[in-house]
Image 1 (tube, rainbow, N blue to C red):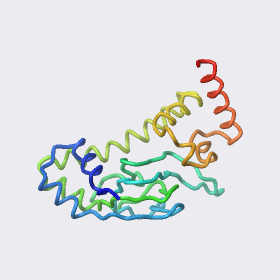
Image 2 (cartoon, helix red, strand yellow; image 1 turned 45 degrees about the vertical axis):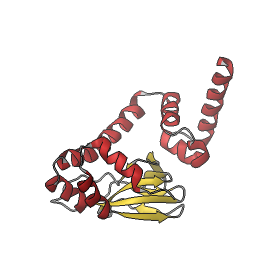
Image 3 (tube, rainbow, N blue to C red; image 1 turned 135 degrees about the vertical axis):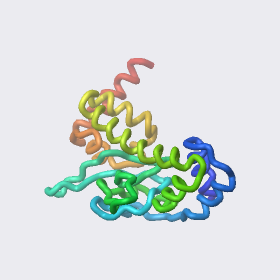
Length: 202
């Protein structure tokens, strides 16, 4: 397997100016982990001590309702970071707001939050890196809520396909339906509608 830190380092450099020496310190403080399909990386309500960068695989962010129903808020795949949406407040105990589950065999780079705190306090542009990581998740959740309330199912379906072009081959259809807030039957009709539009345009 190629060096898992190649894309991780590229991701970091996209967010903040960082020296090779600082990047080496960051890499040495992280750990590469692999988990099988179905593994729960993090449970809602548990203390969150790490951020994860996805090297390979796809995960879902979800909650379980009192009735046992799963509600999916997002999917994350290669070259994305994933957490339980806990706030980056080091003075308090961080508890995940959502659970994270592997939908494929996954490989992650585990970044302890204490390492991010070290970057913020010790690296030249560390505060910018920490702010980006925190803001990215807040903005993502806000975007989800706005799209859910303002866009049609077809528009949200199209946005999901643009973000994850092969998601239908990687994720069970009932989970995609859960993310969209519709039934599996409704999702099947949406897919047929989109297929008919593609045929008419060709």
